[in-house]
Length: 101
Image (cartoon, rainbow, N blue to C red; front, side, top):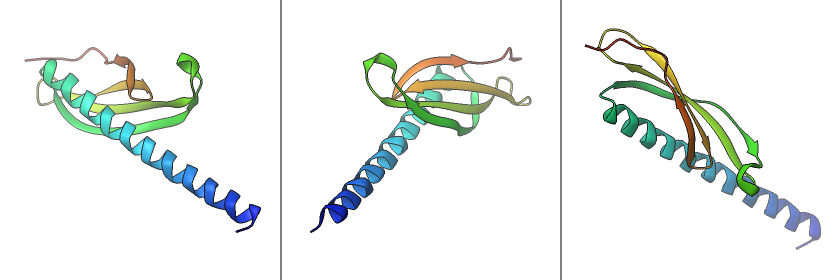
């Protein structure tokens, strides 16, 4: 095995690991959003990742992700909220004013 092959193998391994890490962050964000909506008696309609980038917050390199989700407070109207995470830690959740029953 040459040095070039070893380097290529390590790069592919790193890319695979990061894909797996981002996937686990997405699953965790979906769980956080579901729990948030359940706690506040909201109907969750959809979840999507808006952006993901590397961040150096909390003295380590991790993924900074922003997820948007659609919810309803009364079953008729549709609103868009946002949840921001560093790794799997929730930084903030922002919801616009919404109507409830």
